[in-house]
Length: 218
Image (cartoon, rainbow, N blue to C red; front, side, top):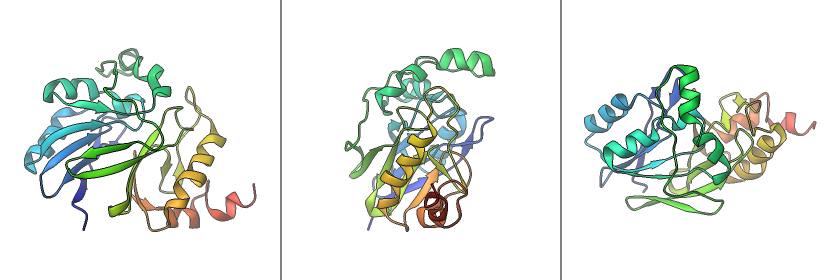
């Protein structure tokens, strides 16, 4: 039985889900996509007696990565992800923050991630899938034992990630969803970067962008 659990709390004015993955047995945890509001994330970890071990990033947009460098420095943690194609986004976080009224630092991960890599939290391993389209270096984290995917901004309940930002491409995003995610199984629960959780089966049934009946018409 999987020991991997997740706590979800929205942060920043973007209401971005910043999941905290943790091992139920060891209490070791990883902060996924800490876009901001570090005090909230640290408070959740403390209230649940969690031991910070890693920071994982799905992609380089400010609402997902804006506080990663500061959090890593405070806790002396390493940052893993995203794919190197998002370097240009991570190198512009401070500039983006000034335009949006957010205090951010540029970010250089300790480890870039590629398709087929694995990331480790305590004794649990998550598989890395390269899913570009929303951003050119977007990755997602799949934990087979839990039948769960931390999916960032690739897919949402009833929608998909926007592709009008630098490096975005709509068809690439649709391909990532149908070719990388659907084969994992309809029962897979996904935790999106914004909004409620859902399953791949539900989205294949009624998502206005990637439902099977929609894709079949293309």
